[in-house]
Amino acid sequence: MNRSWNLGIASQIPKNERTQASPASGDETLKPLEKGSKAKLIFNFTSEEPGTPRAEHLWIEILLVQHDDKLLGQLEDNPVYIRDLKRGEIIEFEERNIIETD
Image (cartoon, rainbow, N blue to C red; front, side):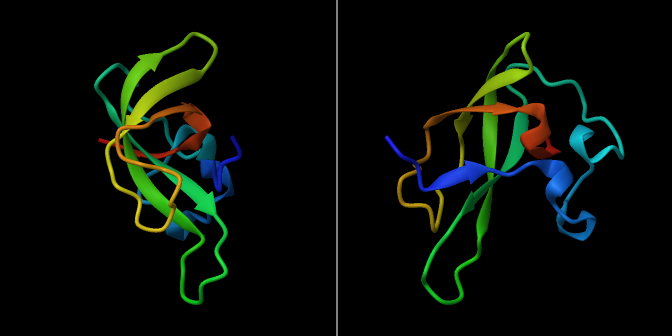
């Protein structure tokens, strides 16, 4: 199934748009990631509707930290603009996709 979105890479986001440093930004390291931790990711998408942003910042609860730098998490937010992404979905991501932790 083709998705209408992809995950942003923290180091490609302008510093003034980040809410907190991420390891990918080269600024600082995030607190250790473990099961139950929260991480905010950027979900990029395109839309032809005027005034629509090009990304949504959404929280994930980490379910599994794998040894190959892959993580699995469950989406905690309901996207506003991305129609094929729903709260509760399982998302595979990498540490470089994280823009904030809680």
